[in-house]
Length: 157
Image (cartoon, rainbow, N blue to C red):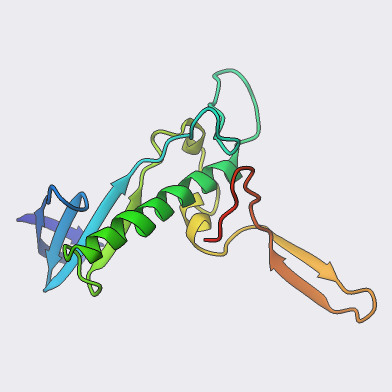
């Protein structure tokens, strides 16, 4: 048992355990099963055109936000599409269980400089730069989210 706190006023007891054949952490709290998969995406293979370039001390350059978001998306997609569905098919995780993919950016040197909106939110929610198109004939203004163009194989997320 571990004593934990949520905020200043709420304290509760949770049961933690590690299962060797599934996600990294299993938590059972108030009859709720919560599975946590911890993942630390890398900058990507040297041959990957979407690789996050390594930061160099003493060299100023633009932070590669788009590439970092793409690495987060790839890690989330890999864990959800492959691992999660495999766990459910094998009966380890029930469809009613909570499944959390915890992203740690420690292996991406450029990710140390976070943006106002955390990149992990940009990886899973439609958050980002807005674009505007104006139809010259009707004057209708259409706002849309600018998507991140992937240099390697594109995918829908």
